[in-house]
Each structure stands twice: as structure tokens, then as C-alpha cells.
Length: 632
Image (tube, rainbow, N blue to C red; front, side, top):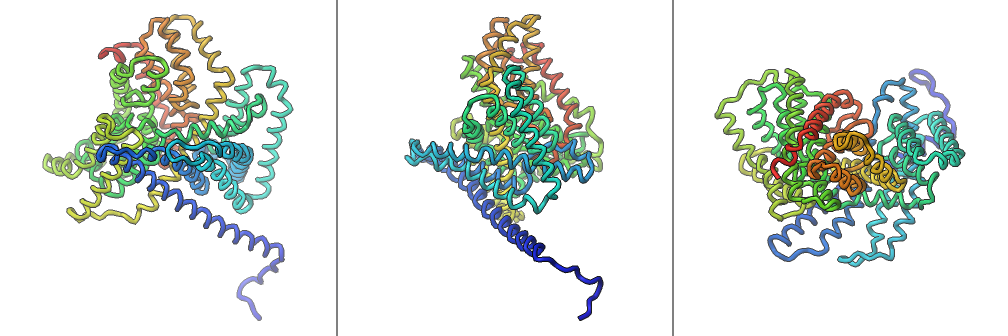
């Protein structure tokens, strides 16, 4: 028998076995991921239906569903964990790849293997504590449904096990054995050094926090380890090597961070934002806004600022605020020449400025833990956010590229009027959402479901009345995308909450408060250090945990130094927001990158001018108390 071309090399039985195993692993991998995607997408739809049914039964029928919030909470943890699994399968957990991107291809391959190995190590370490934590919930019964709470808690070990299974299926198929071996050796060496250094770590007091939460976490972040895993590794290592805290505490803190009911608004607002795009509502709003400001240099950037100012605070979550706005404006802004890095930098900056706008959960939390009037906080929060908005607007005017408005002529009055009529349903949506919250029709968690139903109705009417083509075929992929994006965000928040708890248990918060009370310079010195401290704290803590931890300690000191509590609250919240969105550690920055579908490395350079503008606005708010208390 003759051959065309070079003779085929003999195939050994070993290579056949490897090839067969690779094919089997690939089939199992694909089948497993598709099954998880189906369940996660169904959970998004089910959560929407349950919460909207709760609104209808309570407000229209006047017969509240006592079990709806409880069932939504149970399913939410499953959605968060299965969404995290989908994000893990897709490689969509956020990471900082700026430094790794500069090394050689072989170096990047090693860091990819290292990131995989670190993730596997963290997941393996917390699997049994997660299983133990879920088992302890067997004897706890939920109040409304009267079922064992293990049905909710089981989401944690199941999600972790699924991620470990996917990692095992891909361990040798996507990475060279040499890189994997080096990564394992490096991790083992670092672990051995930390174990042998336990006596030294115990002798240096709270300076050991620098080892775990600055050096170790920072090294993982810069090595392109997913942010959630970097936070988790640092927290676990600190608790395991320097305390006698049960390991299950890490899991319980992650559970607390991920399952806060207000965070359920994150996937629902992500879904709403994507649904607005599918139905064409986004295009109608963008066309109208472009007819007004499209000919202005940086016009749509101003629109993004205004939109974030309008919708902020509705959901209680900055991630949800960004998810409601970004999908509407980003496609048109990119089409007009804006880069993804600059867009995500602007989005993150607008997220940092909006937490003082009522109704904000952080404002409510401050009032509840410090005794400050919530009504006064609501009144005082609007103007400080406006000052930071104007600071960003000045920067946009100064730096916006002319390419965004290139080729765009000023629209006629008739064209603007028609665009307004077409866009009116979309423009009314933020006001509808805010009115539903203010009037008590729906909670901050439920209100997004009203927007979803409203947007569905708009899409159906637009298809019938205007013959508008609606891409309903995209609905299922959008549900899967919503689950993956939400899972990536919530897993980061869960890991950050565990790290925040570890910092609190170390006594760091008490020491910080005591040292700040002794600062020179009186109120001005205290305010300056508070700004610096909360910028740093904001980079690792979500707003509510940070306020709960430090509010009761620092607000009495501010009161003693003659600083108005509302003024101090505004300064603290804005400083914390800047830290939350400042790379490389700010969790909010990575959430903005995930929502904008932009590599975090692309936004690093563009975001610094925006952060500087925010700092200028913050200094102005801190220096002029009237901005915060002038209308009280």
C-alpha cells in the first residue's frame, strides 16, 4: 500500500490511551458545562418570576407571598455558585494580567498554569470546610418553607466540587506538564516557608497582616491569579497559620458576602441591561441621546455620567448600577471611536461617585449603626455626588477625543422630537424604577423585575406595532451570560467579605481607630487621614462591611472634633468608593471590567486621570462642609 506524503509515524499504545482519555475528558467537560449552564440560566429566569410574583401579590392582590423572599434567597446562593462555575469554565473570573501580558509566551504559559494551580489549591482547601459547613445546617429549618437549610448551604460544596472537577478535566489538556510541575513546586515552597515562619509571624503582631494581605495577595493578583482566588488564598493562609479559627469560618463568611439578599439585584439588573439591548430599547435611547449630544465632543460620555447619576442607589449595589447602564451605552460609544479601556475607566469612575445618592444602602447602614438621621443623609447625599460628577465632566471635556463625534452632524429639531418619542419608553424606565422604590411598590431587590417585565412588554409591542425585529433567539444565551457574569462578581464579593472579617478579627480596626484619634491637626488632620484610610479600606471592602466595621468607631471621634456627622459620612463614603474602584486591588474595578467585557489591563492607564478628578472633587467636598449640609 502506498502513502501520499511522509510516512505516518507509528502510534504507540500509550499515545492511544492518552488520546482516548483526552476525548473522553473533552466530552465529559462539554456535557458538564452545558448542563450547568442550563440550570444556571433557568435559575435567573426563576428568580425573576418569583420576585415579580411577590411584588404583584403584595401590591396588587394584597396577599403577600410569605415564602417568596426565602425561596429567592435559597436559589440565589445556587445561582451565585453555579454562575461562578460557568465563569470558571469560560475563563471569565476577573484577573489582573497587565504584568503577565508583558512576558514571553512561555512565561505567560507558566503563569496560566500557576493561576490554575493556585485556584485548585484554594478550592481543595475549602472543599471539606464547605461540606462541613453545609452539614451543620441540616438541623436548621427555614421559617417560611420549613425545610432544612442544608438545601441552601449545599450550593457551596457543590459549586466548589464542580470547579474542581472542571479543573481536573483540563489540568493536563491545556497546560504543559513542565509548567504545572513548576507551579506546584512554587506553591509548595511558599507554603513551606510560611509554615516554618509561624513562630516569627506570631512574634511580629499585626505586621503579619502585611505578609498575607499585601505581599501574598498582591503577588497572586500581579501573577494573574483570579482576584477571588487571590483574596481567598490570603485569607485562608492567614487564618490557618496565625489563628485557631475553624477553617469553615472562611466558607461561612463567603456565604454571608455572596448571599446578601440585596445582591440579588446584580444578576437581575445584568439581565435587564442585556434585555434592553435585545428589545431595541437601548438603540432607541442611544439614538435620542446621540441626536442631542452626538455632535458634541465626548457627548455620550456625558450621557453615561448623567445615566449613572439617575439610576445609582436604586439597587443598593454599584455592580448592579453599572450593569443597568453599560450595556445600553457601550456599543454606541465604541462605534464612535472610544476604546474599551477608556470606557471601563469612565464606568468605574462613575460607580465611585454615586454611593451618596439616595436611596443608598450604605447611607441607610450608616444611619443604623451610628445613629445619624437617615433623612439628613438622604438630603445631604445629592450635592456631593453632583460635585464629583462635574469634576468628571470637566475631565471629559478636556480629554475627550474628537473621533467620537467625527462625521456626526447636528440633528434637526424634527429628528430630535421623533427620536424622543421612540425613546420615551426607555427614558421613562429609570424614573419608573426609582418611583417603584420610593413609593414602596417594590424593594431594591425586586424593582429590577418590574423593569424586566416592562422591557418585555415594550419588545412585544414594538414587534407588533412597529414591525421591529426583536432578536428573541438571543434570550437564552443572555440568561447564561447573566449567570456567568453574576457568578464572577459575587464570588469576588464573597472572598472579599471573608478577608474583611479576617482583618476585623485581627484587631486592625480597633488599632486604626485608636491611632486616628491621636492624630495632630485636629479635625483637618483627622479628615485627611480618614480620606487616605478609607481609600485603602475601600480597595478591599465593600461599602456595607466597611461601614459596619469602622462607622461605630470613627463617627464618635469625628463628633468630638467638631465635624458634622453628615459631612463626615459623605467624605467617608466617597473616599471608600474611590478605593473600591482603584486598581490593582479595588474589587469594584474588576466588576466594572466584567460588566464592560474589557480586559482589566486595558483600563489601568486610562483610569488614573479619572481617579485624580474624583480626588479633586472629594477634597472640595471635604473642605467645604456646606456641600454636604447646606440643605439640611
